[in-house]
Image (cartoon, rainbow, N blue to C red):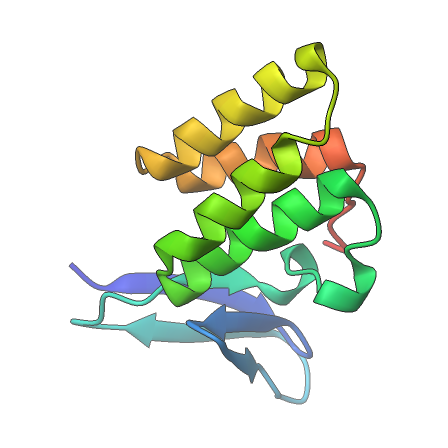
Length: 122
């Protein structure tokens, strides 16, 4: 089954670690990705390492990179940052990390965005 993505002019998405921006003179642009098993995130939900300036944001960054790069080391780094939190915070964050590790990626990233106070631009 093909993946269908609707974007407005100027919107961006990530295909793996590549940013793709839709450009058209108005209206929506539809991208259809067929037969590809690529990690995809909206650019408005991706943060850079430079903007990951709190422990929560660093954890989000490494969970995001785990998904985009398919790199298990990123989960280990996120867990290490969770170790710097107090017991209650750590338990909450570790449950989010576990969700991501079990394949509930978007649910976990959405929860971590809320915890970290990261707002999507959409």
